[in-house]
Length: 375
Image (cartoon, rainbow, N blue to C red; front, side, top):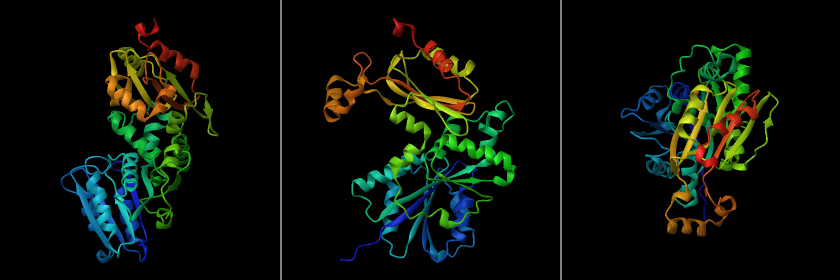
C-alpha cells in the first residue's frame, strides 16, 4: 500500500514587533516552487497579520491560508490548531505547513501539545520540523545587557510577564532569527549574540535585516527533538538535572542552582526582589513556595530588571491523602525526592549572570526563609 509522506510543520514565534510577519512574507516570496499552507494565529478578533500576508505578491494558488483568532494556539485554540493541521495535511497539494504563532504564545506549550497529539495517534500525517524564534536585536541590547542596566529604556516599565515571555521564546527553539541588526553596530550585535548564548546554547542564530533569510536555513526537514530543545536552555538544563555547582562558559557567564526545602517568607522575598536584587543577574527562573501558602507551586521568573511570581499548579503534598497515594502509586519515582516534612515542596531557582557572587546571593536568599521554618 502507498504510504503517505508526512509533511513538515515549521512554527514561527516571537513577541509583537519582532518582525514575525515580515519573516513570513519573505519566506513566502522566496519559497520556490513548493506549495505551502499558512496558519496565522492572532489574539485579536481581526487578524491583522493574516491581512498583511494576503497583501503581498504571493501566488495564491501556491499558498493556502487558515486564520485562527480570539485565542492562542498554545492553550485556548490548541484543539482547533491541531484540527487545522490535520485537515491541511490531508491536502495532497500541500508540501509544507508554515505557522505564525501569536506574539504571546509559549512555544514549549505549542510543541508539547503537538507531540501529545502525535503520541495519541491523532496527528499521523505531519511532523514538527522546527520552531523558529524571531528576536529583536535592538530590544535585547536595550533591555538585557549589563552596561545598559541603568540606562533609560523604552521597555523598563514593561509588564514583567511580557519580558519573561520574550526570553522563554528565545530559550525554547532550534533557530533564532536575530532581526533588525541594521539598528546596531557590529560590536553591539556581538554583545547581543553572547547574551543569547547565555540563555540558549544550541540553537542556530541567524542575523538578518527586515526579516530577509534564506528559506533553506529555516526549513530543516528534520524531526523536532523536544527533549533536546528543552535541554538547550541553560535554565531548564540545570533545573531538570539538579546541577548545584557553579558553571562558567567561555564568555565569563556563570550560572548556579539554588535549592532549599524550607519555605520563603513572602514579604521578605518580595523585599529582596525590590530592594536587594543583584544587578549582575541577567536571568533567573525556578519554583518557589511560601510559608503562608503551602498549597501552590509558584513560578519565579526574572529577565533584565523585571521579575514576577505566578501560581502555576499545586504541590502533590497539598493533595488529599487518597489522591496523593494514587499519584504516588502510579508514579513511584516521586518518592525519590520526597521529604518527610515538606513532601515535594521545594524552592529551586537557577541564576545566570556575569561575575555573580554565588555565596552572597545564597546568603541573601537564606535570610528570606520564614522564621518558623528555621526552628
